[in-house]
Length: 485
Image 1 (tube, rainbow, N blue to C red):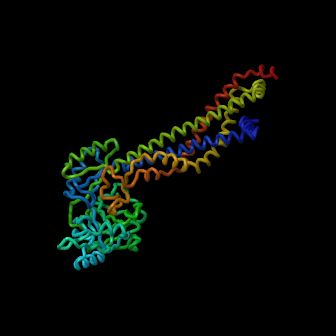
Image 2 (tube, rainbow, N blue to C red):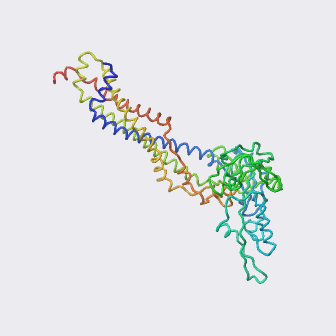
Image 3 (spheres, rainbow, N blue to C red):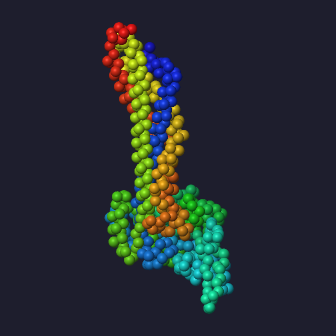
């Protein structure tokens, strides 16, 4: 009988014990594989955050943020200055517009002529605090109804000559946010997630194309290839994107020169998205950027600063999952060691007989190693099935236990309807959004590659665990065993 056949037969000699050993190994191996899957998922998420979020700085006019505040607008010359700052890899300018539905704007203008105050007080339709932000009419209708909050936020009391009368604003329609961009990124610097169609090609040239949020397109019965108007110009829908929020999808993107042309403000920027070459250089680049642009001209912020807390929490999960993987792997090896030591002791007579008839120690040791690998193979098959179902839940439990310490921050769903909140992001320390959302967005899936790597590690540990008792066979002397019989 060959060594392999004898090893397989010995593995099933005591079926009850074999089943028990396989069950224990399956638990240990399944836990090890689940932890490895979680570790790989978290490692990938950390790399994603470091690459796309942690290295982004935003530049806004000094004293201004989106459609709020004051100060002087940014210029193309300042973008060129920012691009020369050490460790800056790219600078993307943006120009934000508020698009009012032409019919609604006409109705509000008529209402104001009859003595009613238009939304936004005396500053123009829909602009908070009476600001004169760039507003253009469009054939599009907003995908979001004003509702209670919209009407409450935009209502404005007006006083008569005696200062004792007050009128409430009529109902109004929310504006649509249009953002001119110099590259295919959203307002937070991330690549646009197109669900249909294509991009706009050269974002540094004027174009009659536009990218619409999916809900805005649905509200206006538009699809790729459809047309709509902004001012007196006709635009074609080139693609649809999903920003992940209702506010974010009530928006559209144009090329930067197109937005500047619609606003009749060539060379003017609402914000700049500055990408630094690595996280290690972010602080130095931020300081150098502020110095180059001047504190009286621009505000430089790392809108995602608090996401470092999320990254730190994910790093904790990564470390915990790796330690748990190593511990489960060691447990599997210890189980194999103990089982094989027990089998060597149990089969001393059999080993003595084999050695007495001339079987070399190498052959006998190989028999025990192969027997251990048969048990590990069975345990790995069951453990892999366990990991495929349990890895997601285990990863979620680990992340949830660590996410309570993550600082709340974020961009999506911010005020003003921008896909990333205000153009250029929120200021540092903003409590909106949440790092918890980033943490819980980690998806752990048991990919074949990760499972194969984990099983390979298990087999490596099993071989080591089986070699120790296999070497013990060399110490068994046939004459002593046979004499005892």
